[in-house]
Length: 310
Ligand SMILES: Cc1cc2nc3c(=O)[nH]c(=O)nc-3n(C[C@H](O)[C@H](O)[C@H](O)COP(=O)(O)OP(=O)(O)OC[C@H]3O[C@@H](n4cnc5c(N)ncnc54)[C@H](O)[C@@H]3O)c2cc1C
Image (tube, rainbow, N blue to C red; front, side):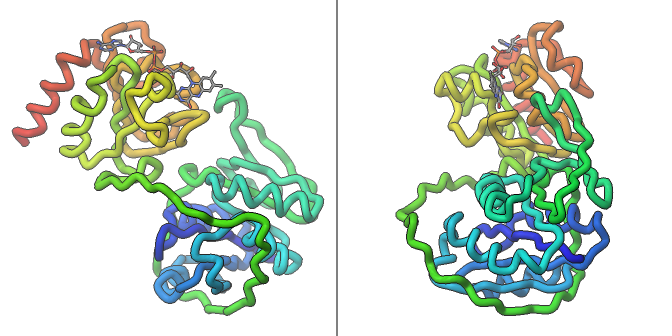
């Protein structure tokens, strides 16, 4: 019995969610192999070898993995899946694309968005925007799982896994990578930032003017509610919540955010929640560790000034 963890890359590095997926996989206390694919893997292979708890790093190198497409990764995984009793990936956009394909081809039901693994085959996962936590026993012969990365700490980097090169299947050619538009930001990534400050639609056109300087001082990522994104005040990729990014920072500051359940679904694993809202009855206060009943247009400039002085 052994576990296959699918790595995810960001340029020449592993994504933080790969570290968290390895921690999740360690719950089974079985040998863990990490599948890494790309076209120039020297740096990533060296990094992957260090992930604590990994037995072997399986390297699949091919030109078409520079920009991996779901169909090609699917073939790669299916080529080796019969060696494993467990297949696990982060519940990322990528994991959500690949895992169902693997499960369908193996005719096995996957368990997705797992936040706790109770060995050997029982899982806890949220449903109804996190209002219900279901405990599920999975009776399938192969456990195919996606995990919510933020529910697991990152594994350390003191491992020394064996490197094994494996053949990459030929490109399928059913789809083609054409290009990508990336938003470049000096700020930390929303899903791995230590501090997140997020705004609701009440910030209006002042969203960036008010939040940017504070985020800079706090080295924070910026988030937004869906209402704020829909109104065009914040970029789509900033949306936090059930249909946006799920985050678990050390500190989450919600500014002018009502606290709808779909938003809460994305923030409730935050360690400390601070809410600023002028309505003392706003639902967000029920979930906040610290609350400030105040007008955001007064408080944010004051906070900014105070931060500049420190
Ligand atoms: C299927 C579905 C999925 C959804 N997914 C998401 C999701 O992923 N993420 C998400 O965020 N939402 C999501 N929503 C939308 C969600 O239900 C709420 O509509 C949204 O979160 C509300 O955003 P808001 O808090 O910015 O706006 P509002 O609910 O309008 O709240 C504005 C808040 O600002 C306060 N305020 C106003 N002016 C000031 C001021 N001057 N100073 C201080 N406070 C002020 C008000 O008191 C109020 O509490 C989803 C909805 C559906 C139906």
